Length: 319
Image (cartoon, rainbow, N blue to C red; front, top):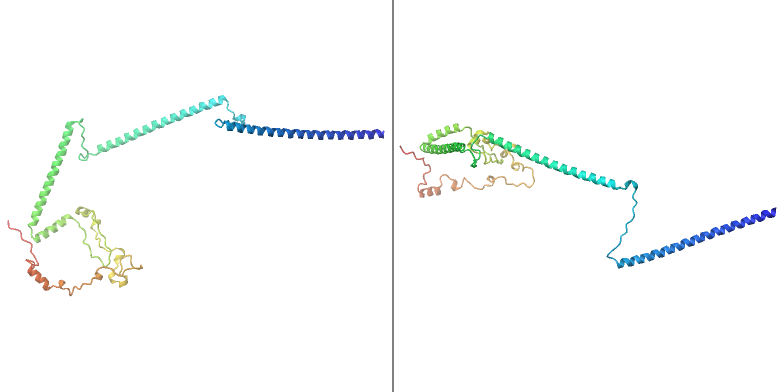
């Protein structure tokens, strides 16, 4: 029995060795087969590339493009019915947009018509409120009521004749006034001036004397007629009155402080202040400023009528 068990163990060991050898051989054969297939595939690919290169070089004008297959999921696949439904919805959307554009155009036209009508009504209302016939432009339309136009023309012509008559009378009154004042004496003219001044109303204040180094302000050239001066008080003010820093009398200040407004205390100030300070003329010893000047008396004697210093106004001729 022990011999049988030993022989069975040897037989099992041999069977296992045989199975291991067979498995090893099968693995080697599979590896060789895979290696052969890889070499064949590489050779085939190289041959295809060479052939494709030759065909491409031969037919470069007609290249062939291969599309890559793309997988589309089921939920994203569009059937024929879905495409038709999408086309119908797109057509309806385009129709709605076209109708909306037409509605906007009609609304714009209505707004424009309303605006024009409002402006026309406003112009008509202004023309009706304007009752002055002189401000109305003449209408040269022939298809109007000739009798009414003739009456309006008569009114305009009458107003023009009245204006011309008033202008002539005004000129005659001015000539009579000039002739009347020419025939007056000095005393009568002075009294007449006082009377006219009272009738004219308030006048501009007489300008005061400008202080030493005071800033000068010009009153301007506009609105200086007598009517405006009589109505507005601001035009009758004294523009020579000192303001701000000019209220200080600079003649009483020390010499270094006698500067114009805004110049005191700054560097690079000039020593010259005004022209009178630089006047070197000696009026006391100047022969031209002497009362008893012999040169002037000699010239007056030689000039015909120049020695008469006072000339009286000629008296009017007796009527």
